[in-house]
Image (tube, rainbow, N blue to C red):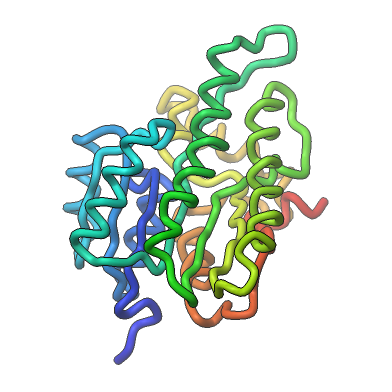
Length: 249
């Protein structure tokens, strides 16, 4: 039986854990050849073993352009093209106004905005008509939250990049969409509290989510498959919130 992403080549940044790993697993199960990128080799090695299928890993810091050049040279030499780019790698720190450091600002914008921009721009020579670009956004692109102003600003920037890029790419047949998760059960989220507080911490999000729970990485991954596949061939420039309704209230 033909799988949804059979024959597709996908590059996923931040693909060694959390949402990125969930997307990589789902893409591989749908027949894609997957290249994951991340900063920590040990995590990449573990991720490759868990994903299965046709998967490779490249150690990359997306805020460094030379690392991105190396990533796409690997992809070019191995596959000759890219059909799907998931610019998922991101970073964020809680800091209220008055306590935001220059280092925190530079890190967030360096990874979330600069890194996303050049992840996509450097992929362009390998992208052809019918390709899909997915940017990982956040409900914080349209909602405010205490101590997350810098993170939210980076995600609002990503939303506008997509709006502008669909005009820059007009006529090329390359679609760009934003996939914006809500609170998802990932190592990054649960790692914010001690293990014994994990479930209570996750439950604390429930009152603000109409579905009454946090999401799972595979729920984001299934939406990513839609945006990456021909099923969304006329979907371009949208921000798809996969957050149990949190951004809509």
